[in-house]
Image (tube, rainbow, N blue to C red):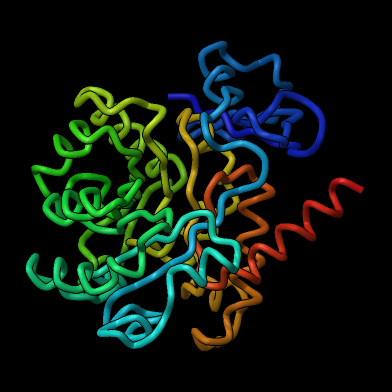
Length: 320
């Protein structure tokens, strides 16, 4: 199989995913063959269409998704919003979040599964504060998805890409809501135990393409699907770096892309030194701007106001 990664991203060439970025060339990738840089004229017509087509609802700057974990054990903000421990979803919106992503089960490396009843209870505790807020639910369970949609959630964000719960696919198809499909390798409790790939970039692409095809077959329209490469979910530093460097490849899936690397351990690895979770803001901003420069449509972050300002400055420089 041949893969095509846009290169030469900037302000001229073919429009990337119908957004403000353009690409002036492509890199032809094939397993066992050295990459080859080619002009955009070399693109097959179907790939050209997927790379350039407008993503409805995702134009201009990336949307900022603010993270709200209603858990006692999330890797970064565990306990901050748990059991009334503070935090106002509306404050994330005031800070500039376009959408608030609410999760009531931690899926950090090493996390244990949470019982359905407990996840529903945690979600219910924050629902009054979500009135009037555009929000998504971060869950793997169909029952939690249904409860969240009934309560006003506008998107499902599933780290298992609708593979964990056999009822999830049909639920999403029936409800007509957008869904984020995230790549993962293994379960949260064990996913960081020796993750292995022959070619992580192409394998993650193939896996996401297969999940998109499964959704299409189940009646979920392509316009409702968002793809996430799953930074830190069953990946080593080497794997994460390869995915970040090759992000533009995933526009060939023909759907919007979400990037979630905020405060993750990959930042410590890329920095080349120990960086406590609470000190990873500079690295989180660097990764967010890298994603924006590669045409990512949604950035999932903890530090909303800082990310919004960084994006505004970046856009201001590019517009000058």
